[in-house]
Image (cartoon, rainbow, N blue to C red; front, top):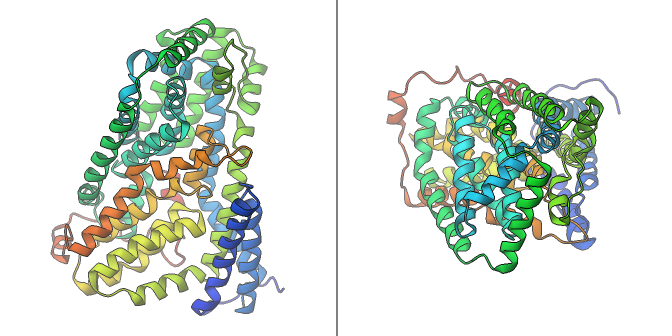
Amino acid sequence: MNDEPTKQIAVPPLSLALIPIILTIGLLGLQIFYYDDFTPHIPLAIGFAITALVGWTQGYRWKDIESGAFHVLHVAMPSIATLIVVGMLVSTWISSGTVPMLIYYGLELIDPAWFLAAAMLLCSVVSLCIGSSWTTVGTVGLALVGIGTAFDIPLYWTAGAVVSGSFFGDKISPLSDTTNLAAAVTETNVFDHIKNMMPTTVPAMIIAFLIYLFVGGQSNAGADQLAQIETFKAGLAANFDMGLFAILPLVVVMTLAFFKVSPIPALFAGFILGAGVAMVQYGYSFNEALTFAHSGFKISTESDALDSLLNRGGVTSMTWVVTLMMFALAFGGALERTRCLEALVGAVMRLSKGFRGLQTTAIMTSVTTNVVSGDVYLSIALPGRMYGPEYNKLGYSRLNLSRAIEEGGTLVSPLIPWNAGGAFVMGALGLTVVNGDYSVLLYAPLAFACWLSPVIGILYAQLGLFSKTAEADQIQDEPVNDGRVVAGSAVENVVESAKG
C-alpha cells in the first residue's frame, strides 16, 4: 500500500461499513463464549486489520489508517497514563496502611445489612466532590471491595454498587471531564446541562439505592461471617497501624482533585506520599517501595482471604488492561478514520422520525460507539457534533442531546469490559475471569444506576416528558466555548478535555 496520505474520501455504503463491525463482534463472541477465553485483545487486533482492508478498498492508504489509530491513542494517553499511576497508587496505599485503615474502620462502622447502599452513596459523594470516577473506583472503591469481602458479599455485587455511585457522581459533577465535554460539543452551558440531567439521574439513583438496600437487607451476619470479619480486623490490626497518619495520602489526593488539579499529577502526588508514609511508618526501604509500585504489594498474614485482598497493585497489574485499551482504541480510531462509524450513524439518523426517534437514536448511538470503539470520549463527541443541527431543525434544545450522550456515553462505558471505563474498573477492583468463571462480569448488570438512566431517558423521549424546546436555548448563559472543542474529525481537539 502507498504510504502517502489521501484526500477526503466519501462515506462508505452501510453494507461495507458494517463488515468490520459485525466480524469483530463475531470474533469477540467466538473467543469469549465458544473458546471460553476472556482475552478480547487479538479479536480486536484482527478487527483493526479488517477495517484497514475495507478502507483500502475505498481508496485509503496505510498512512490514513495508521494516523486514525494513533490519533485516538494520543487522545486516550491521559487515560492510559492514569491507569498506570493508579496501579502504582494502589500498591503503595496498601503498603502505607491507607487502604487497610479504610477497610478496618469500614468493618467497624458499616453494617452488612446496608453495606451495598452505603457503598453506592459514599462513592457518589466522593466522585461528585472530586469529579473523577476513576480516582473514586481506584481508592475508595478498592477499600469497599475489601469490606465487602469480609462481609462475604459477592465481589460483583460490591463492584456494581461502587460503579453505580462513582460514575453517577462523575456524571453530575462540574469538575468532571466528560460532563464538560458533553456540554462543550453540544454548545450548552455546563450548569444547565447538569440541571437537565436530574430528571433521569435522581430516579435511577433512587431505584438503585432501594435495590441495594433490599439485597443487603437479606443478609444477616451469621457466626461464620462474624468470625471472618474478626479475622480480617485482627489481621489488619496486627500488620498495620490504624492511626490517622495513614489517611494523609487520601486527603491530599481528594484535596488536589477538589481544586481541579489534573488527575495524573494528583494521583502521582498520592503515590509519592503513600510511598513516603510506608517507608517512615513501616521501615520499608526505598527499593522496596519502588518494587511495590512496579510489581505490587506482597504480605503474608494468617488469613489467605486477607492476603489475596492485600497482595495486589503495581504497574504490572495494569498491563492486561492497558494493552486491551490500546487494541480497542486503535480499532475505534480506524473505524472513525475510514468513516465507517459515520456511515452507521448516518444510516440510523435517516431512520429516526421526529424528536422521539432522534432522542432515542442519540442515546443508542453513544451506547453503540462505546461498544464498537472502546472510547468514552468518542461516544460523546461523535453524536454530540453530528446530531446538534437535527435538534435545531426540530425546534428542540440541545440540552436534550447533551443529556442523551452523557447517558449513553459516560454511564455505559464502565459496563463494557473492553471499553476504557470497563477495563479500568476490572483492573482496579480485581474483577478477573479465572478458569472460565465469568461471574465477575455480573457487576455490569448489577450497576443499576448506570443502565437505568439511559432506559429512563428513552422512556421520557417516547412519552414526551422533560423534553426542552429550543426556547430554553434562548435564555442560556454563554456556552462553555465557541463550539470548536470538536471540529473536523469526530475526536479532533478533545485532547485538552480528556486531560481533565
